Length: 309
Image (cartoon, rainbow, N blue to C red; front, side, top):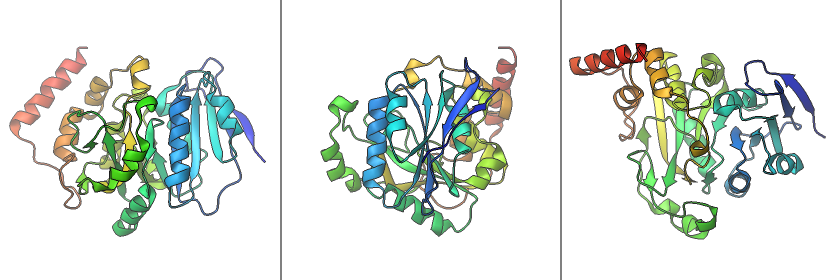
């Protein structure tokens, strides 16, 4: 039995100004509510969801937001007996999509995952163990991505198992993913990440001024920081494979770099490197950094430049 409704969404820039939702009967034993926004990326979405079905230790609620769905995504998702979904006729971007998906979430823990990710066995067990070890809900946790290219992000493991579905070597990935040394790390920001629903609601989800989504990840972390969160932990043993930016290259990007500066008075780099200490070995809760005079002047200069853009 399904429940489909069309609801008004005045902030979402759609032609129809409506969002279609389907909510299946809740799973009483679901651990995570997994939000997966997608935009005409059906083959990757199918691979992502199949990996969650195969390699999760626990049952989860899967919620897909379908932007357009003109490639068959809408038909496929509606045919699946275990997928809740929201749908917009046009691409409303990640921020609006995630906030709409949140309205269907049943569990205490909300996971945001990209549609071009493939989870590895026990990815969820490792995250849940980390949550239990923390012992409270004031945290932000990320899994560790394995990516085919070196991007300068020291939070990831660099290993090429294919740059697209045609070249994907899943068998090799499953044989080797656990063999790489990667301790827990500081600076959880990027998906797949998990946050308690109360924290999500406290900070208001993802900020739509960053729509369609560039720099919305560090902004969400900064909102958690200002709400008092200091446990930003990357879990080295929870691993996923990320093909990387299979939708980003097709959109017109927002000027999120400057939006972040105008909103927070510093660059996103200052926040991720100095406050979150992104990629450094995890050594406990973070503390507010002592910024050098040069760093203060740099951020002042950036704020002035941003004001005149």
